[in-house]
Image (tube, rainbow, N blue to C red; front, side, top):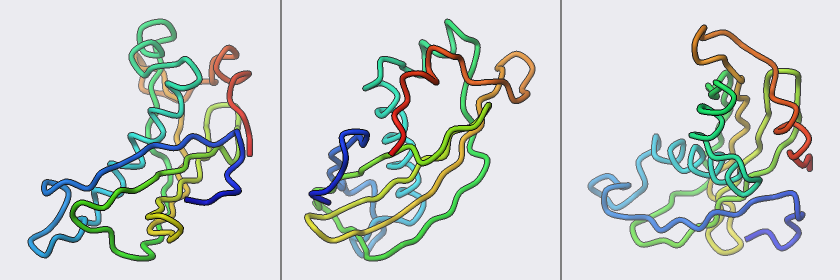
Length: 139
């Protein structure tokens, strides 16, 4: 894992299971996006905001608006990986995350993901709640 990861980063440990792979034991490409979704969820949870709490108390959810992915090296069955999630930018109604998946010191996968905050009743973009915005560290 990147030893220079700042305190504003969240790290999620991931074990690659059989269900994550294709018949050759290589992680199926779409599963990297599932790993990233978990990383963003756990990033928010570490700040004290579960997805269910945000839905219940604020009536909001997040949808992926933009995604850029770079597959660097294959991850394989039984690998132990570390997903480092950071917030690159905040806007009124969106968050830009950068995520990097590591196997030891080897970067496996990079993603930049912009999520939009939406009102769950109307399905329209809405401002991030101030209580959340003030807790999100930028890196």
